[in-house]
Image 1 (cartoon, rainbow, N blue to C red):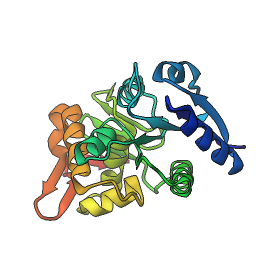
Image 2: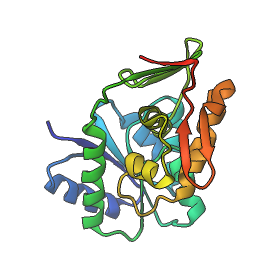
Image 3: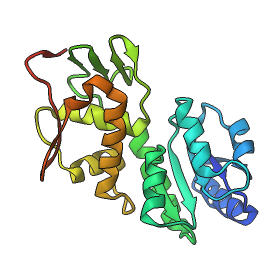
Length: 231
């Protein structure tokens, strides 16, 4: 089955270039020229969004924020002329998966698309898929986290980080190891990106925030103590 991609950009020339080259690679491509149009077009069959940040009306960042709040975790590649550290961190904190600066190389875009689709489609289940720490439960088979049986709303990246730490526990994972596992080979992702996501993740875990431990100078690990049980 061919992968379906939604390209969202208010510059028609860029949409035409991306559509032509992606279709030549065998993808099915839909095009929207605004965030509003994209929100109406987006369906469950889309496996990737290439999303311009600077658009009239709903910006790319705002659209990504809306999708994640609605628990839609379709992979997003941000496409933008803005390329400062803060912009990159904003994109990733909103649940973006990759970031490409304009003007871009078509070959680079195609390579990033292939890598992201491969990374999100090839999911290898670990031997252990459920963890429990008092009232906190992590279930990789259902991609869910609950506290006292109430589901916690996490972004895709937040869940991937938490499940990665659970799988590795009690091993300490460096920021570089977390970046490599969750973001893959992405030159625009910084070590600080991990800290941003961990901070947001701890806030959502509330009373269980301290289950994620920062070992200064090394990295992070999940504290599964004697009261925890691995299922």
